[in-house]
Image 1 (cartoon, rainbow, N blue to C red):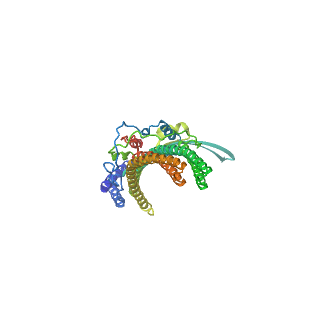
Image 2 (tube, rainbow, N blue to C red; image 1 turned 30 degrees about the horizontal axis):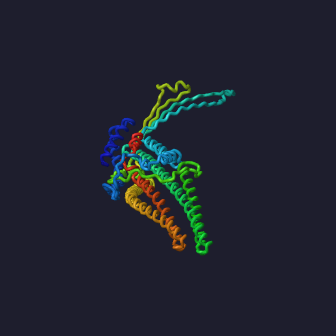
Image 3 (cartoon, rainbow, N blue to C red; image 1 turned 90 degrees about the vertical axis):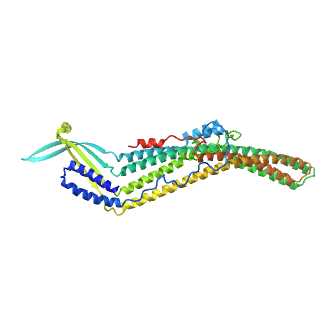
Length: 503
């Protein structure tokens, strides 16, 4: 391949040089010999072929191992699975107002602009310059001073073009386009991540509100227990120890109530910040967490991962590093540059546009790097190292994606089992606490049994609320791991659009 390139470049350079500089045919053999030696030196210094996304880091399974159940339902976006218009409105508000997302959008525009700049290197560069000059000169002649004023106008155009014989400039342009595609995928990943963050923050705020209401009920309940204890003490059938333990129970519940208020305040302010609002912490919340409209379908195809924005971004960065590695290898080869200029000059402005007075010149130059202190070789080593790093990061991103999907799928059924068990525990513990309070009032049990039954009832209900929220959060994490809903809705092919825009 390298010898074919030698022959091709020799033919192009010799033909263009003969046409431009009017060389004799006898010069061609000498030029061929020189070019052959130069190109052989360059070809011998080319490095290995860079790593590409075709070298898969791991084998993708046909389907996921996590057990799932089937619940038929019509396709819908993943937010619709929570059946909450209020949540959808909050996500829309966050997409419009979040500043981190706005910064990601600006990075996409910047990357697209850089790809256009890189693509422009393959096209001829044209310049046009119009200049005007006025000189005033004093001459002494026969004792007299003569003042002479001259005008000079010039119009000059220039053209320069580097022939992309080896495809080096094309490699640079393709790398820039891949960077733009990666930035666009990063933006879509940021949108998906923001939607997930808002959803999780909303769930956390609702759970914090539920925990607060539970704490308020617990304080009232413990105060009722304290009244029973004090009543027994006044009747002489209880001890002061029982009263003090009951009072300590109430004080602990009041401290927990203050903590729940603080947690709700922080959750609401976090939600405001994600929405791009001033963190007032005044968002109205529903009393209950939303219910999921459908279960995870069985046999989810692993191809859903292909739409994950972070995987797309990692693959595009790998492609960009591969193109830059190829460019660095080709920097060792000679470059052919064509330059030309044309223009006219006159003391009279109207004569500047006289094409009969036009002068022009053309020049073709062939440059072969010989010695640059090891800079080009170091650039090639650097590009190769960046390429290997990009491949390793891509491989790790793929493995992380597999882990996230498998983990969240497995947690789906486990969270459901845990929530059901905690619901039973909360119901039984509450009935046990009420029975214990009645028996304590009758003097059938001691204060320790009463306090322990009350503690278990509170802990069980608080844990049930927490697990209900974590179960919804796990579903959000599953959507995030899959890159969207359970339906195979691929995002628009923005990559082909970006590549088509590149000159």
